[in-house]
Length: 311
Ligand SMILES: Cc1cc2nc3c(=O)[nH]c(=O)nc-3n(C[C@H](O)[C@H](O)[C@H](O)COP(=O)(O)OP(=O)(O)OC[C@H]3O[C@@H](n4cnc5c(N)ncnc54)[C@H](O)[C@@H]3O)c2cc1C
Image 1 (cartoon, rainbow, N blue to C red):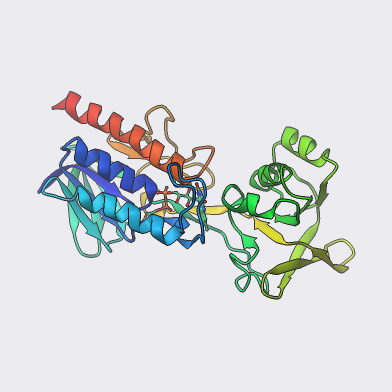
Image 2: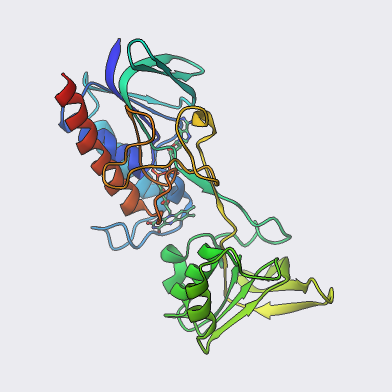
């Protein structure tokens, strides 16, 4: 069986692509380990457009219902399969997508395998995850209006998180392991640190997340003096990086230094003809549910045009 399109990934990007592919009657194989994506872990999502609030798990179920409503002889679903490799036959320009169970041949491939946040690995971090300790400022920031919060991580994402939090938090303290903030954009660092409610502590590492039912603070260590102290906080926002799920295509398409697939933001095309990518696994500047879905739709429009203009 030869498919026109293989979609890999069951988060908002993959599902949006699946729905659009079916509506365009592209012969599609849809392969995902799970449906729903990263934010199924979230207690409540308040910025999925069209829903004031929705539990992450319910969003996952809604995505699955929407996708399954289109599953038919044109859109074939393989949920529970993990793609381990994609290869290209240079003679035919066809791609082979391999899982432990099957292999699929397709003219075009959309990679929407997302990623996962790097978790804070100190005592108390897992206990208080979603009880004041969170990995998504756009998602949870407004819940901490008028309160003291801490950002862990002084790269660009950390400073962007601090900038967002300063709009509602009483105070924001950012801690960073390194002595300088050289991984963050200089202009952002300057504007954020100039805010009267902001404190940035270089050379400071997290030791323990403290709390009872919810977070009450974080114990930190000054790496110069080795002194430990407690920063009282209602919220802790961890921004120590994300790992895109792209290792299985490292030999196929160009990725940036962090492993994100490089795409043309107008079309979502990757570096190899016939491959598109969308969502959190790409080098897009921002990673959110709505962006993942929107970028996947953009990719689908371009894939449809590409397939039909070759037919
Ligand atoms: C806790 C948390 C809360 C969040 N809350 C919000 C929020 O409130 N609002 C918001 O806009 N964003 C939120 N985000 C960010 C949002 O979840 C992501 O931007 C979004 O999920 C990205 O979608 P995606 O489809 O690109 O990838 P993902 O959601 O990461 O989905 C990737 C999919 O690919 C599948 N997959 C991965 N590798 C393979 C493989 N090799 N083979 C087959 N399948 C594979 C996975 O099973 C999964 O289905 C949150 C993130 C987290 C972690």
